[in-house]
Amino acid sequence: MKFPSVPGRTTDGRRVHLPVDFEGEQTLVVLSFHRRQQSLVDSWRGFAKELREKYDHFDYYELSVTGGNSGMLPPTTMGGLAPSNARNRLDENTVFVPVDKNAFQRRLGIVGEQTIYAFLVEDGDVVRQAAGVLTPKTAEALESLLSEYETAQSRWSELGSESVEEQSES
Image 1 (cartoon, rainbow, N blue to C red):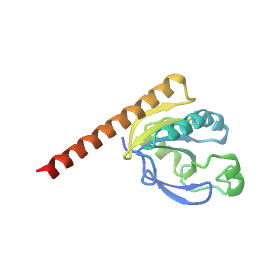
Image 2: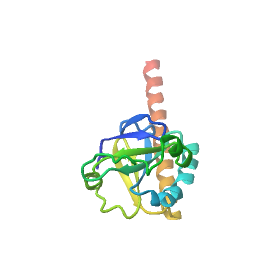
Image 3: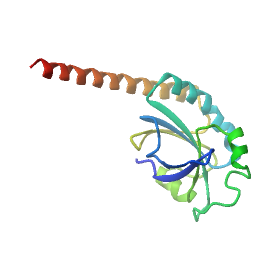
Image 4: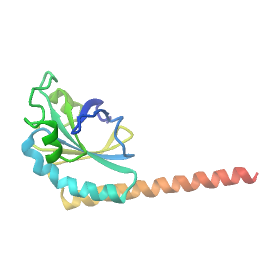
């Protein structure tokens, strides 16, 4: 399934368009729908930062999905926080996504907004997903996927360089 194409705004006010502006080859996207879900999001944050340090091809984003059925933003989009206050309380990887929540959820195949969701995205495609707090089993599976991807990418690089060497010897 494709990750929906949506506009967003970072905590420093920069406009982004997702998934095009995701920076990682593999990107963890943690979605929340309510400010009260921040503790669930935080359960992913530390681990995601560790993974970002370990794997050059990996990045993560915390998406705060705002808006109602109309997709229009209320004046307190960021829960009443001014952008400067939002920067102090939220991660630098937080993106506010003003969309029709119901349509966005349908496109991702999720039901409701009672919990958070995490998606691993590669080239705009969702390859894995989880719901709720990060568990040790989910963390282990995610790190295994990143490691396998890194290994496969280096094998492709090695094969490519061998092919170039063979052609230059001819």
